[in-house]
Image (tube, rainbow, N blue to C red; front, side, top):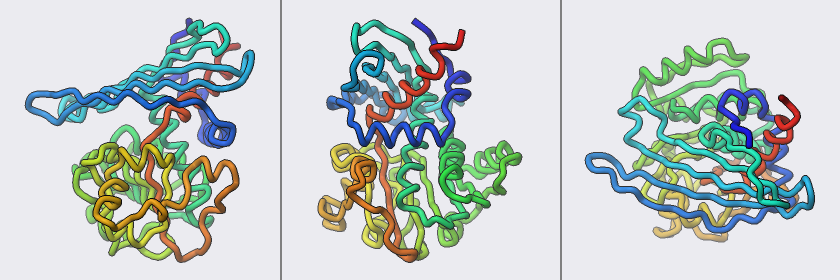
Length: 319
C-alpha cells in the first residue's frame, strides 16, 4: 500500500483535469451512502466534527474503486496555528477490496472542493468574469482562486478576511500569479464590484449581503457546513438563481440553504439544479448576463473518490 502525501497530490492533480474528472463522476454516478457525521464536544471552544465518507464506483476490473475519507473539522485549530480540516483517504480495489493507497485527505479535500466550485462556475459564472473576491484567507482560499482562474479569465483577485493580516499575507503569497492580488479592507465594497464572490469561512453570521450584489454576479459558497452557519443573507438568496452540489446534502446540512428553506425565503422548487444535472446536460446554467447566480457546496464522497482515482491512476506507475 502506498502513502501519498500532500506534495505528491498537488503535483498530480491540476485544476482542469480534476474538474473534468468530477464532471465525469457526476455524469456516470458513484455509490455514496449517507456519511457518518459526529459532533465532538470541545471544552472551551467550538464543537469539532468527525466525518466518515464512503463511496465506490460501479465499474469493472481496474475501473472499480472503493474509498473512505476520515475527516475532522476542528475550528479551534485556528488559534493553535493548525489547519482546521484534517483527514486521510483510503483507496481500495473495487474488485478485491485490497488497500491501494492512503492519501492526504486534507489536501484531497481542498483540491476536490475547489474543483467542484469551478465546475459550477463553468456553468454559472459569466464567461467574461475577471474580478474575483475571495472571502476567507484560510487553507481553502488559494485553491479556490486557482480553480476559478482555470475556468474564467480572472485578472484581479481581492481577498478579505476578518483578520486583515491574513488577507495581506495570502495576497503576498500569490504575488507571482498571472492575476493581480490585493487585500480588501471593506468587504461590502469589494462584493459590490465583483464578478465572482467565493466564500470559504466558518462564519455563523452572513458575510455576503444581497443588497451589494451587482447584476451578473456569481456567488460561490463553500464554508458554512452546518445548519447553524451562514455566509449569505436572505436577500442574497432571494435575489439569486440557486444551485447546489447535491440536493440531499445542501438541503440538510448547509445553513445557507436550510435557514432560507425554514423561513420561506427559499422553496425546494427554487433550487434549480445540482452538479448531477449539469453533468447530465439537464440544465443549461446561466441564462442571461444580468442574473445573479448562487452555488452552495457541502461536498460529497463522489468528489473524493473521483479525485483519489485520478491521482492514483497518475501515480501508480511512478516509482
